[in-house]
Picture 1 (cartoon, rainbow, N blue to C red):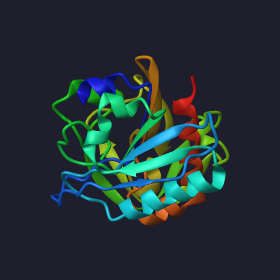
Picture 2 (cartoon, rainbow, N blue to C red):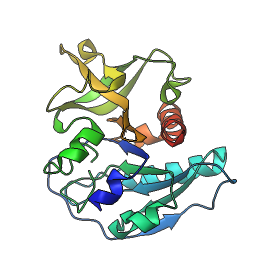
Picture 3 (cartoon, rainbow, N blue to C red):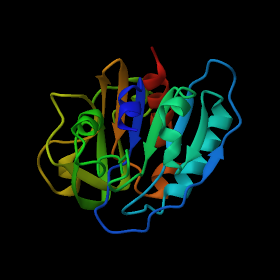
Length: 234
């Protein structure tokens, strides 16, 4: 599985982890009817071995609805880790780790996973530290020209569980969103979304998405669609 992930050319990771205990998920697969030819094929992995977010069902439904309404990509949602084998991955353009958690045989919640696999840490960009603020906060858009940020303005406000990371990824990745620290009564630099080239491909990470309301937010959905298009691009 690790070798298979290393060979991917596009990986898209959504939401960091929560270190609380939770119940492992049961394998299940839901496939969205394929979009027109040449559109990105997305494998959405929501497997959990630790904390399980209540927003996972909403996330899966939002992605299926977004794929059907935009016809910009097709999506297969799964919790079966056998789908991450090299042979099956040849059928997809983007692998999306959404709200995963724990020491899985090969995946995150995206930053709360696989602490003992350094290559994964480099792929995701940083490891989860804590979530000190669960409240209304302001997110600053650092690069409005990136496809994942198209049409969302220069800043926006939402209720979210905002994360910090074990080390700041700025300098290793292209930071796309950051928390306005003053909006939560803090100070410092807290990147929330970033992108990078990785091997022959691309990776994107977004720390938002803890609540179902975030997944239902059109601004967040724009980020998801833009990130898929960007990671799938050659």
